[in-house]
Image (cartoon, rainbow over all chains, first blue to last red):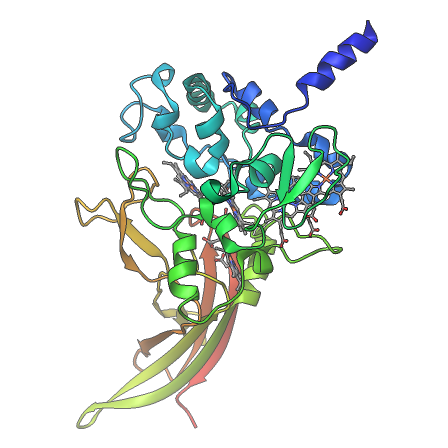
Length: 295
Length: 97
């Protein structure tokens, strides 16, 4: 009896993604993209990811439930009359904050999400994450016509691993974009998103990278700056983490220089009228790969 | 940026805000919120490889010959209550030579 239960449990806990059937509940969607198994072998990367914004894309800053207005009647152009009328389309935010919902979830998931927002059910909303599988499978291929869609049971990364010891993902294929900014640019925004019934504009950072950093002669990728290897492996914290204020200060201190020049003098405004003045000249320079701040 | 007299009285305070600013394009009001923002109408953010230069001037009150100037560069994360300090520079500036 015990063995049987274990077996059933194991089957349910083995998502291969790219399934034809769509998730009907938040739990089903979370299960489909569940990456908790990766922890046993990739402990360090997993621990970094867990603290990252990608692990909490629906409540990124200070646990705030940012999509709440979209579940409240009249609060946004997208809000349904009642949470029970929510659909995937009434949450255009999913495009980047939870792309697997667009491809793998029924409208019932949006209803459950809208209701959870109103109920402030953070435990439930916390299950919605940009997991390992979202990047290493779902969003791993951009040239879908030339390279084909991501396959079930296959992971993608910057190099090939012919025999990957995971039970379900038995191989890792090379994705041509994993070391490129385009990988991140998929979700980090170009400008207004005009494909929706009403415009949506959130992150536009990839646009800034393409149109300000590259023209200025910048050559580094998002990964080179944000995923510098720790113990030989790409850092999956992908800082800044806004909930770690001292950490944010440190990154900003390194990226932004401030030069201050001061002068005290008496300006001759007109004959016999000296105006005592203090003049402060400041110069700020940035080594970031895009505007600071974004959005 | 603040300028204070030797005994700590504030002479003046000036600030600059560096960030992209968006509207819904139907009015000239700047708006917050991804669900309504449609285009930038002004962008004062710090650009890669471009120096952001400012000049601040304070006129000293009668009889005041020196001031303590503090330049404070900080990042407002989500509200004025949540701030990451970046650089703070304090200088005493005097007219006397």
